[in-house]
Length: 419
Image 1 (tube, helix red, strand yellow):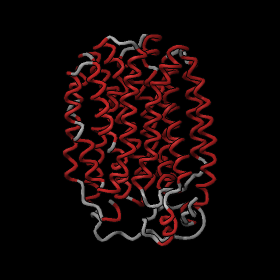
Image 2 (tube, rainbow, N blue to C red):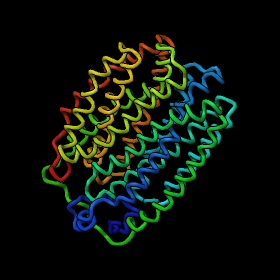
Image 3 (cartoon, rainbow, N blue to C red):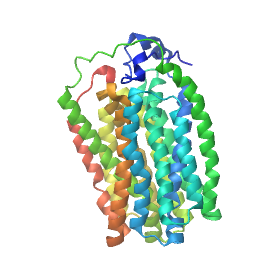
Image 4 (cartoon, rainbow, N blue to C red):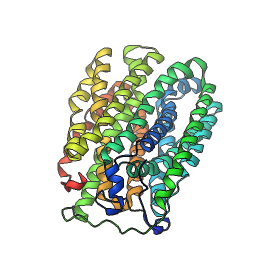
């Protein structure tokens, strides 16, 4: 395992600086390469975390039928879950920049545990909203600090580490519909409680990772990394962050349209069963996970800006074709869409982190939180549109979202040390 990355005593009261790969204090850790055990553990935890989260949209058909919900109410469940994550992630990231908490991840997973337990016994719509919000709260605690751990364990291969971290979450998201089809649909809403065992396993793993993380945030003083002479100025940094936010908007809103309503679209247009529709959703989400794995290393190799260009704009031909395709062609198109569009995630997040390395936790929280918030808000708006115009019209509108990828032309060229 890597030699601990040394951070100052002031990290407990001042911003935690994620050091540049060229910093002497981390030269040996970088030369040693990534800490694969830690990366594997944090990726597995991300897998377990997002598996539990993805159960919420996967059981929408059951909740819709059991409680006679309309699409707008379904969208509000997504909003309750993702709004707590969106609102609190930047707050958590800002707090941990100033005072890192090595065991906060395990404690945060407890919110997910109780949220799932409450969802399994909920008998009223308001209780469902509270349960969804608790799961979102667990996500708010998990993502910013786990992204920091992935970077500390990267050995300088930041895109690779972020992809390993992201792929765990993406595969976890893809497992939700499959597990819902195999377990929740046959055994009903109470079977959601069985997934609390997954939360317990995640708590144990994250507690052990906390012991590795704790030495990284204690000990000797370290000066902040010097600014690279070719780094963009503050004005260009602000413009770049705005562009990255818009790019993430286009990506995440389209993914939200599929993850929240694709099941209903398939049932409405092709008259498939709920279980079959969940399997088609699993195909899309699995391809989404595969794309997340490749995006980061490609960004390390060729530059993140080029990967962002390809992954957002490259999905446009396939999204335009989807509303007019048959059942099996739709499945094939969603494989291409999921793989291409998800390859942007790691590059967008690492690009933003490198623009503001002195606010690593806050930036991670903003972008992870923004992704959740856009998904939640978008799901609520799209649900309202679907109630008035039909679910098929939603995908005709969303097909144009990847065109926002043209804005990548405004991203600055980053120094070679931070591509």
